[in-house]
Length: 351
Image (cartoon, rainbow, N blue to C red; front, side):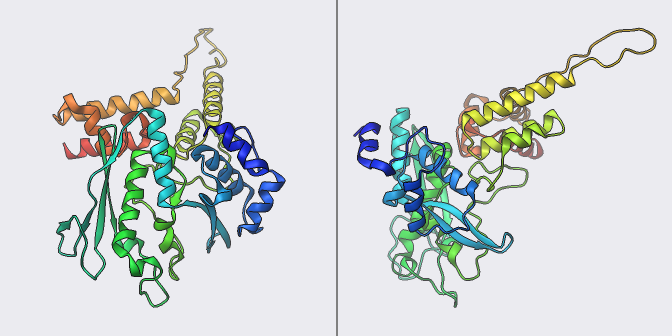
């Protein structure tokens, strides 16, 4: 079935690739699905962009917005969610589009004694599960701890499917983590219901889906509601601030037109900074040309620093890109600049 077939079958609820806002019919159905007036306009806009990017249908519940009370903002904050099946659909579609092979190693479960098993037969829940996704020969392994994801009642005991299928639920969380490592651009900004189950725990006010090391950006962080990267770039005090905004926009999964707009703002600010100042009283003239560093140049500089750090540490340079991808959790070409710089710092510190 083609995209045109899907659009025709969807009728007035079909999401077009070129639409920039929800239609009245679509908005009415979204309200009936449980989205109330506390939802921010930016959250709805980001949700539309996510539906278009993932090609999941919110009106057949392939993807949906879940509101959870946030004490800091004193309102419900809406987070996009899908199921692990939705993640698999996105991953298989992205792999097929790229002409990549997609596979898995056997799922492993860990007991409290630290031993890994390829099948879980104990009555007690496992301590953790490990899933390895193989994309085009590259391996992306992730471990999910049961204690971090289990959904609980007020008394702290497990609830829902975590009572009946703790091993399966923990494995689904590990699979979601591994798939997001293997497909960071396709799965950025959306989490699975299995991962988010513990966000509904009575004591849970904040949810940390992925540990981020110091100075390391999170390429899977959901953009802050209401953030306007272009306006921030226009009002930034200097070029370096614009570059940082570009990095954050890229990590947040902003579309190419937004990233290109920030690049143009960076060039304009560079040109303004390069304009000649008043000549000294001695009558000497001279214009110091400012160096224009684009985000692409910034990326190349970060890779050069990483390569230099690896060489200085006498690492195996024959497999430089493969080893870097394993350490970064994604292909070097797809890694955010702050992550590359942080890895270079780590290698230098350990050398």
